[in-house]
Image (cartoon, rainbow, N blue to C red; front, side):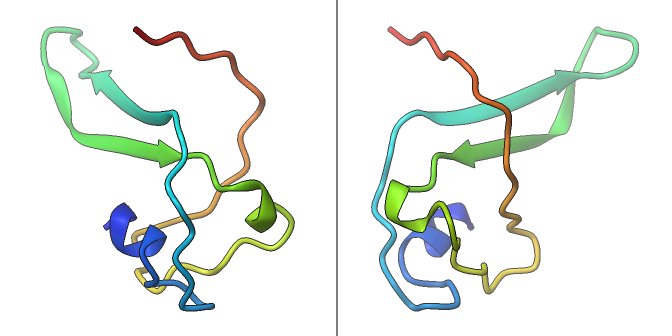
Length: 74
């Protein structure tokens, strides 16, 4: 679904371009013994779309502003 938003399924019908990093948030259940089913995938919106992000056509896709963070990868 996120890729469809990036690849033109948005209010401006524009290909947004891919950026890195792509973040996946995976949470444990309250017991801490299993993973929850829901996984959040987040992507950094390219700079030219930061001030006025295209609206997703899919109601399950949300544009949210997050606090700055430092990401380490390998």
